Picture 1 (cartoon, rainbow, N blue to C red):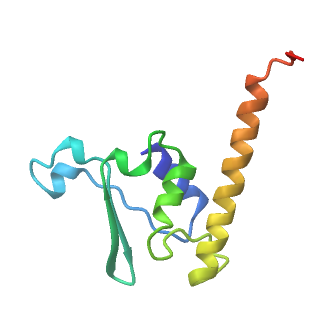
Picture 2: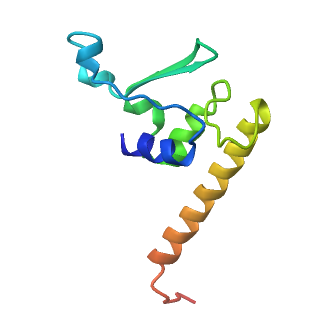
Length: 114
């Protein structure tokens, strides 16, 4: 949920809705959570069931990459259609690389094995 909440703030032109699963479908199994239904122009474009669909380490970048496999879903409000999708993917890739570099720099204690 935290990843989706973060994406909702990053992509204000995309509507995110959160519901209690058992309020929608009685006895909905917890193993199917999260369930993400993707709509665009009133049509279901994709559905993702369970945490495993977002990879081993669920990060906002990983979730964004999965969501971008559907019709243009994430939208920053600056572009339309395929241009929006490409802009979002480029931003996600950039943030992912920056995060990996930052983690590597934090893990590096400055000592060298040379």
